[in-house]
Image (tube, rainbow, N blue to C red):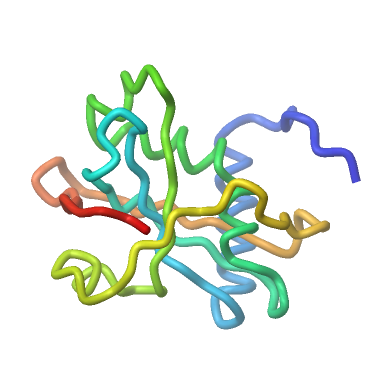
Length: 143
């Protein structure tokens, strides 16, 4: 299908993505971390991606990058002002402690990852932080 910019208001894009996440989270799910290209060793937990079994969760994340980055720039000024743009990585679902202590790999999303054909087969749930003191971030390399 053709993938154009969504004409939907941003809030309803988030709601749709969240509904997709709820639908598929027991199939394939991953934590999504983002960083700025300029500072690629400081990663922020930006939420969770999910997709239908048989789809690649990295592809599902890529499909939702615009949404994920837009949500993610609220986390830190360095992301908001990233002149070279942002990068994303995935980790196993609900593995934030392991990412922080480096026992779990943080996998950069490959450039040419296959995006699921159908937009109804994946979703994203933003990590909602109550305040700035609770932001989850880590200083480490991704591979």
